[in-house]
Each structure stands twice: as C-alpha cells, then as structure tokens.
Image (cartoon, rainbow, N blue to C red; front, side, top):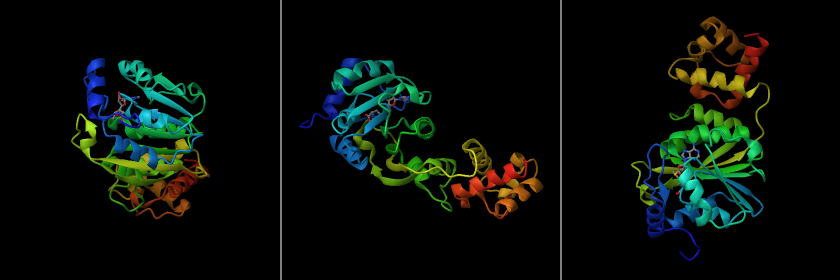
Length: 279
Ligand code: SAM
C-alpha cells in the first residue's frame, strides 16, 4: 500500500506468520481495507497533538493509520501474541503497547494522557469498554469507535426511540454522540455476520445535581423493566411503588411515563430527589 496501510494480502501474511487463528471470543475481526482505515481516521477528526488510545489493535491495521496522524498512540491489546507482535508492524517510536484487558486498565498507566479514543472494538465488550474508559480517563475529549450496527444505533439514540436504553443514557452522561455511518462486513477478515457502525462522540460537562453512581442505579432500575411505568419499574429501587411515586413527583416527572422517555438530566433529577427525600 502506498501509505503503508495493510490490505488483504498483508493481513493474511501477517496472521500466517504469527500463527494467529482469529477467535470469536475476543471479537477478532481484522480490518483489511485501507479505505476504511482512512475513513475512520478522518471521521475521528484528530489533531496532530492528540494522544490516541486504541483498544484492540489486533494485527495493527488501524494502529498504522493512527500513528501517522497523532503525536502518540497507546494500544491496549488483551491477546499476548498480538501485543508482542505489534511493534514489528508499527515501528513508530511514539507507540506504547499495553498487553492488558481494556476493561481493567486504570488511568495511571498512560503517559502521555490519552485525548482521543479511536478503536475497532471487540464487539462483545464494546459498551462496557467505552463507559469504563470515559470514567477512568477524564482527559479523553473525543472518540470514534466501530461497533456492531445495532449497538451503534443504541449508543446514539435519544429519548422516545425504540432502541434508546442503558447504553444511550450512560453515554449521554459523558458525551454527545452521533452516527458516523455504516461499515459493511466485507472489510473484515474473517467476515462477520453483522453490519458495523461508526459512532463519534465529544465529551461534555457531566450533569450536576447527583453522583454518577446514584444516577446509574436509577437508569439500570428504570430499564430493567422498560415496558413498565416508572412508578412500577422503580418500585424495587425506591422501596415500594408509593415511594417511587413520591420521588418522581418530587423530581417533577410523571410516575406514569416509561424510562425510555427520559433524558439523562431527568434521571439526575430523580436521583437528586431520592437523596433529598432520604431514600
Ligand atoms: N483494530 C484491529 C483491526 O481493526 O483490525 C482489530 C480489531 S478486533 C475487532 C478487536 C481486537 O480487540 C482484537 O485484537 C482482540 O484481541 C482485542 N480485544 C478483545 N477483547 C479485549 C479487551 N478486553 N481488551 C483489549 N483488547 C481486547
């Protein structure tokens, strides 16, 4: 490839040389299409002074594109064979490889501090990874992630949408998210049986008025029984439907609506009202 990105032949050759047989368990579908890499890097709107955090560099397809665009790349890879092989593929002095589980990394291991999350995520843990990193790394100001198309739709959904749920509201706590398009299965090896979607996000000031953990508990309770009214869905959380109703009324929210109609700010109002009422 003219710009050094990996195409199908290079990916197969690398995998064969390393003895890599992609596993479903780790969501190992590798990008072998330089145009998709360029598209992801462009959609991430990176600045030359950005520090990129890539989760799951795999064989290094996207890592090569990122290394050309930013001042430092942190690549967190759980598969020790892939982590060990990465520096031979991406021979950049400004790459740090972390052989680690992205769900368990803490902020103190990253120097310089990451400013942008850019990743073709392992699909089975995509949402927890994004939420964990946004919580753990306050320096992350933007992100561009590729996830299963249905998950992308959920992450960017707003109140009232059929697919609005826990991932949508929790991501909204941290960031403003929007779709950056669809990606077909053919750009991966092996070819997955789902479409993929790109989600771009920009960090926002977190809502004020209640602690994140308290708000997230309300969100989990409201969507655990999403077809029920909030009065019923929050009964277990509040200690009875009557108490749930009292808190909702105090928060200025109708007890008869469902959680899928509420913004993250309204969930904050419920958590704040519960605290004031001593629940
Ligand atoms: N970025 C590469 C690409 O686009 O070709 C590979 C993407 S592949 C969809 C996902 C990668 O995430 C794999 O390399 C897999 O080993 C890695 N992975 C899976 N679970 C992980 C975790 N919990 N933490 C870090 N990496 C993980």
